Amino acid sequence: MAWCPLCRSEYREGVTVCPECGKALVDELPSETEPEWDPTDWVTVEEVGDRATAAIVEGFLLEQGFPVRLLDRSDSELVTTLGELSIIEVQVPAGDLDRALDLLAERDEALEAEPGPGDEGEDRG
Ligand SMILES: [Zn+2]
Image (cartoon, rainbow, N blue to C red; front, side, top):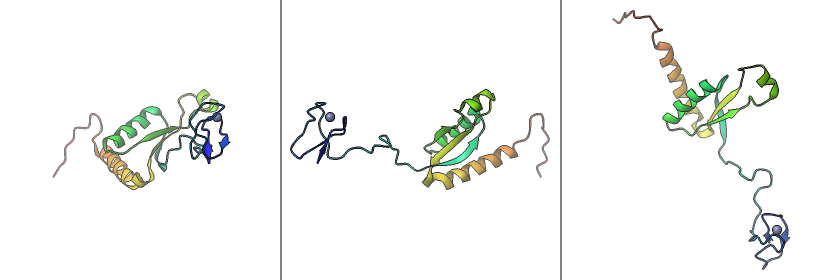
C-alpha cells in the first residue's frame, strides 16, 4: 500500500506520486501523534528551581559525556507572574540515570567539602 505523506491519502500499489500533491508516496505513514518522536527514554535526574542552576547541572553532565536536555515546566502564566520561580527538570537517558546520579552525588559532596569563603583554617593532620 502507498500513502501520501502530505495529505495522508491511501493509494493502491503501483501509484508512486500523489496526484493531489505531486508528492512521492511512501510505504508507511510516519506516526501521526509524534512525527519527531525521540526514541530516547528521558528521565529526570534533578529538578531545579532556576535556569542558572539548571545550566550548571547541565554543563556538569555534558562535561561527563552525558546527553542532557532541560525540560522547562515554568511556562505557565501563573508561575511567570510569581516572579523568579521556575521548575526545570534536568533529564538524561534512562540508561545513564544511575551513573549520572552517582556523579551528581559525588559532585555535591565535593561542593560541601569545600571551605566556605573567608574560612582559611587548615587542620589537616
Ligand atoms: Zn497527497
